[in-house]
Image: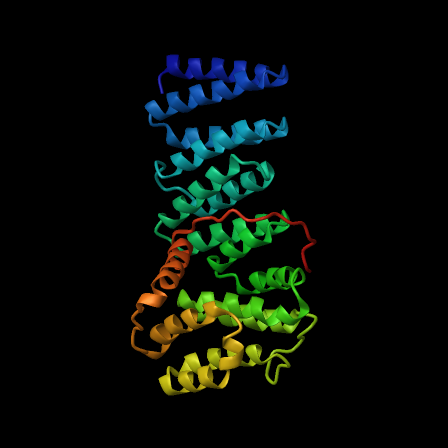
Length: 311
């Protein structure tokens, strides 16, 4: 950067600091954007992301959440332009900003962009880490339904299970098995049997109405999930079919289970693909849309709630 350019930036930074001190937050926000365009034009991306990160935090100190979110979005958009970026560091930095920003409408765009950036980073672990961070934030905010969506994509089975225990407390006591069965089957449909097993084990161990990790469980559906996870280790289609027949009454409690199990059969047991008939086409499309949404890391608008996290 030339001395002239450097001096210009220094003057803007000095004005910016004065604007913040005087409460001229809109003016300060616009100065940050001016510097954003200047650094971008000069391709000074390392300086740019540090400027935007610092600016977001400073605006948050003055409770200027929409403006801070705007800078955070520009920050995420700039990360791919930095060579030799410490991606793990910046996943945590972005997560910290999202947590401080809190539940405002503008944050939805930031969450979506952060998920997309992590998904395109070329690192599965980075993608899972981003989903885990977002899930944790939403959980702490009491938004358990959206947290559930991100936990499914996070590969953090134990934490997901603890959140499900909290979520199940909102339902009927007789449905505690439905929460974990639904979650495990979704994880299996994403071919994530290891995390599914961790989720099931933690849920059954720590749920106060279950408090067991092995059969016989008092709820038949839990026995089915336990034996299904064991059967997956064998890959034997006959065993899978026998289990589904034996626990048909429990499986029929939720119409979605049959569709999940069809996919589980294909993925883990070599079952033939079931063609959708005319009567099942719409439902099949809904299921396909569900899994497409999970794969893309999209978000659903759900009702917010507020409960304390389990230890």
